[in-house]
Length: 229
Ligand SMILES: Cc1cc2nc3c(=O)[nH]c(=O)nc-3n(C[C@H](O)[C@H](O)[C@H](O)COP(=O)(O)O)c2cc1C
Image (cartoon, rainbow, N blue to C red; front, top):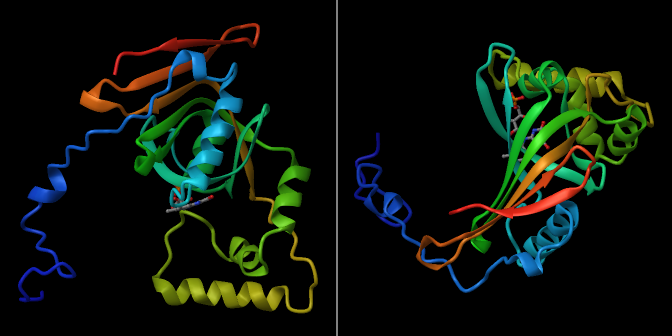
């Protein structure tokens, strides 16, 4: 362990006072019913475009929560790769922890944490695999290194050291040497989250935040409501 005194580049982990006592008074932005779109996808697309425009780091990153077969919840970050009236798409390994969880229990929740904008969007719904052709098309457009990595890595499985992983990558590279188009591994593809509830949260001053919630009824219509902060 280093004995160096704490400096900005070597902060003291025994003093977390600053890290644990943030009290941001959020600014003047608001989200009111009159400004909200008629459906959550339109509203989400507007906020995502704004998050990118206002340089949120990885604006399409969302933290997704799933339920393992034994009932245990688990979370991780994935990247949104498509959003339209059909739902919210991300890509992964169907045999990963989240993949197995979703194939058994499609219930899912996801949050886009746009802290620098004092915003979050939360999805509640179900995630199902996208059409195989959709996964094929997306995979075909990935960089070759990522395509090979999808073959090399059995996502979420243990491995003995970095060397073991690099060996699997070399094996996959050899397998596809001279092959122009790396095919999509069957176990790799997309999920589409179809939400039945979407919350838009806008931080406001004195903790009186805006929470607008779209809820889909049985006929597929969206109703807008507000929650207390
Ligand atoms: C910013 C960021 C983006 C990520 N995007 C993805 C993604 O799109 N798909 C994916 O499978 N994993 C992605 N990951 C890795 C996952 O968070 C996770 O480690 C991996 O999917 C295994 O999760 P699981 O074991 O719960 O299935 C990303 C991680 C970070 C930090």
